[in-house]
Length: 388
Image 1 (tube, rainbow, N blue to C red):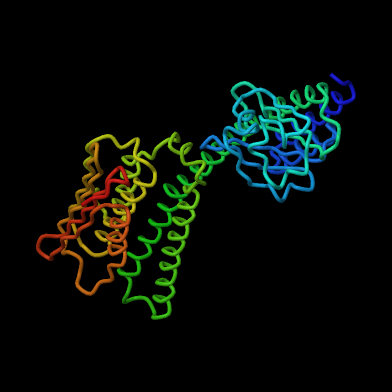
Image 2: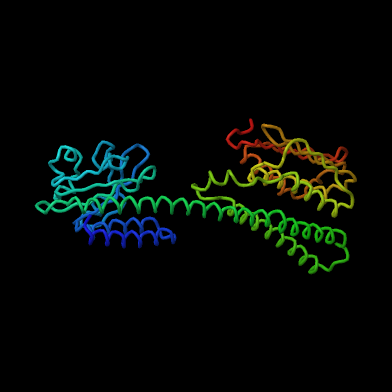
């Protein structure tokens, strides 16, 4: 091994390891890898080719005059670079345009080069692709010592990048877990408190309507509307926090699920404070592993149904039943009140109908002055299996 090349390669590998583990962008790290390889191998062009799902290799980074021309170019699995990228032996030739191992797959953009060396990028089970260097036609071929150093360099930095990607993935999972925790606290604590405050204010407004001056009643109504708007905005934030990037979807499946039973108990406790009597809550099935997105729909339906009991029914009894089986979750909220008055704004109930439809579930409302009100909301646990 040539000492000067070895020292340069070791220094370059150290710099790249530091950059990769510091979280630098992958594209920037790959560009640094190929620039360093060109520098210590005294090459005119360097390319990094990464394996794709179909077995071919894609040129992802380069250093030299033809880099832009070939970036993104795909080479077949049986090309020299393709075989190297899939764990084959290093390929070295003094003229890759005529060597039978390489000539069948030389891109037109690279026919001005002759000496060629391609080494695996990574080692063992962590080969990511191939690192290739080129010199112009007529130049001296790559020596065995240079190829040896290039191979060691490519193996080391390839493994470092694979490990760094694993560390970044773990960091993204940790970040998503934290976002999920924040979302859960916003939804289960802050929203519940704002909701209870809004309901209390609404009760005061309805009870004291005749005692308020017109401007005071208007201001109180505006305050209640602002609380409703704030709740809607927080729910939007919760949805954003719980919407990971595509590469995090699989990781999110491993996160803790929402305990829907505990959420239901919280909603019923708030309703009890506002109604002056405890609604009956009946739970059937296991609710600790409901996916957060599905649980949010059920929780919103329960909250809206109880809100209507408080606002409109005048009920003395309210029963909440929540049933979960292998296929779906079924929510029923019944009261013995006077029903939803005609002409009363039922925007919240309309939103529940829209929510159920969008989520593949079913919603229906049965209300009359003599029988009270029944709100039903059924939701499949698998969003791909839409309810008929």
